[in-house]
Image (cartoon, rainbow, N blue to C red; front, side, top):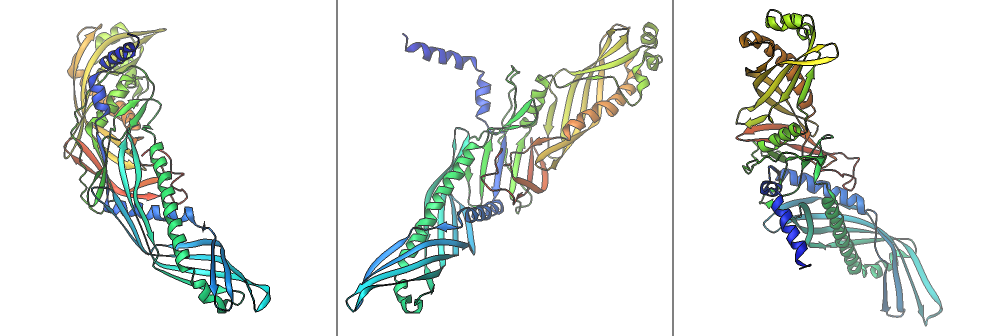
Amino acid sequence: MAQTLPLFLLIICLLLIPSSQIQQEQEAFTTIVISQQGLDFLKNLLITQAISSIIPLKLPNITKTAKFPFLGYVHMLLSNITIYQLQVLDSYVKPGDTGIAIIASGTTCNLSMDWSYEYNTWLFPVEISDKGHASVQVEGMEVGLTLGLKNQEGTLKLSLMDCGCYVKDISIKLDGGASWLYQGMIDAFEEQIGSAVENAITKNLGEGILKLDLFLQSLPKEIPVDDDASINVTFVDNPSLSNSSVGFDINGLFTARKKVPITMYYYENTLPSVLCTEPTKMLGISLDEAVFNSASALYYDAKFMQWIVDKIPDQSLLNTAGWRFIVPQLYKKYPNDDMNMNLSLSSPPILRISEHNLDATVYADLIIDVLEADQVIPVACISLVIRGSGSVGIAGNNLVGSVKLNDFSMSSKWSNIGNLRMYLIQPLMWTLIQTVFVPHANAHLAKGFPLPIIHGFTVQNAEIIFSTSKITVCGDVAFRESLSIKQASGPL
């Protein structure tokens, strides 16, 4: 019985978790697609970073003993073998069903090393030795690797499926000592030098991929937006590989940073696809309207969508005297008293995205308060249905926006000052919405929220495409040269 109790408690806990929450944590509402141009950019960046991280590369010493006519056995040593320059003339990256292949051909590298030898011969009863310096040039080297990508508990797992290095030609030039005499002797090391270069390059590539895998797995699963919200960037399913792109699905919904109870909302997953009008763009990020509605719901639950207005452009409207011809009974009951407006949303704003528009509908209650002595006296409540349209843009790596008022409707919810003639109040409400509430909303929308981009990369030349229920950001990316891949920590 004692062994079955933990299992029983686990089942109870699972039953208490809303099924929609479990389901939505496993669904994708944001899709990221890296095009062939983007893969080429990343490939070139990785090659540059890899070269800078391994150069200079020191190779193990090479020793060899050979028997020569009249000389006997000669002991030879190559030491301080160092690759100090590596150049990749041509390379390409190709995704496929099993992984991502990266091939670098026409690669050259330059090495420096010290050489020495010694031998004893019956012709001379003394030990004979010589030493000097040598430079080595490796040409026509080919390096290839195949990388595997998969989802591992919401993070990306990078694995090295295959790796190889092939050296085609080696030329060795000796300086010092009687180097002209022993050039043929040192040429005998060509095969060993080539093998040492191949092994060193292969080993360092493997170690580099392990470090890159650790970096990817260390990426956070949430991107902080502000003190209240984060974006869930957990990966969903395995990456999708085609012959010219790599796609990733992430959850993308807004989540509360503070672990407080919030209302669960279900968002329909429309499986966002990325459709960029310019195929040369490196990156495409598609966000389902559920992402925006999750932000709306989160800030609503956090009590963020409540405002008390005590300052407006026409301050006379916050005194009962300014209402004496609109609501005479208000002025009669509270003559020359100051007022404020208490606006609170009655439900989360609803956003709808179509091919040409981003529409928002806001349901709100506006309570009119009279300030009398030390008291705040609610005198009336007006229900508002505000309809607006929005626009979005890119500021850095943030998706920013603004909204404008299209129209609104209003009705009296309750009143302590008699019947309200809504047609007289409507122009005043229009002014308040246009001059107070819309600018307030736009001040927050202008800050935006971060796109799922790894720190150190910046979106450039972005275009925004509207389609049914989604917004797609297509653009190029740039990398800060002052950073290395290891330093580029942050959200993906």
